[in-house]
Length: 222
Image 1 (cartoon, rainbow, N blue to C red):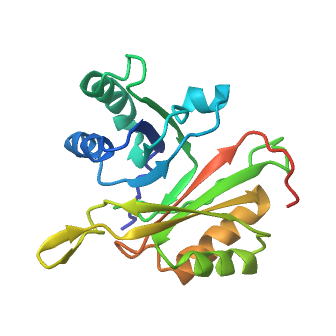
Image 2: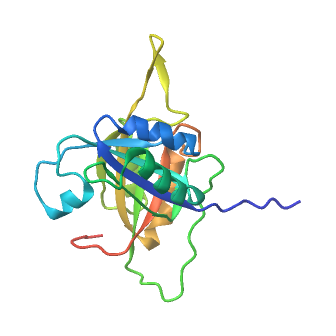
């Protein structure tokens, strides 16, 4: 008997709100079917049009990243806008983008992207790997062995269904390393597969990895 795996589509949903509201946003998102997310803490001290557009021109912002199934995209935009008044000035912003591949979510499986006819061989992918704090070096070591020349490490905290632990009967949320690696498309599959093997990404709670298409880059030496 042949088993057919459903190839679900995913989106990266990002919402930027004032510090202290992120947990409330995640709580409401879980009611709509989201299983978890990763928080980044931002401070905006440089005045620029780009920072103002992203809502980072004021001090202390929370950036919540959630990998969601595609069918939740419109629901989240509509409901979170209503609940947190995102349609009003200075209440926050949200945006989403396609996720090319994802590993580490329930019932997800990494499937290499087929080469598209006429595709530019020098285009790039952005590989994000989210693991417990202290494991970024292991991620980068695996990536370098697979052909990567470097990456960027960010720090956040997790709040997924597999990530909560208790200390003296109080819930704690372990800190996270977020590793961003830009890769030429011909190296992406090797990098992803070696990271998932070394970090046991397929094991629940071990981390999450997703790949985004990069439309344009400048200053890269890959």
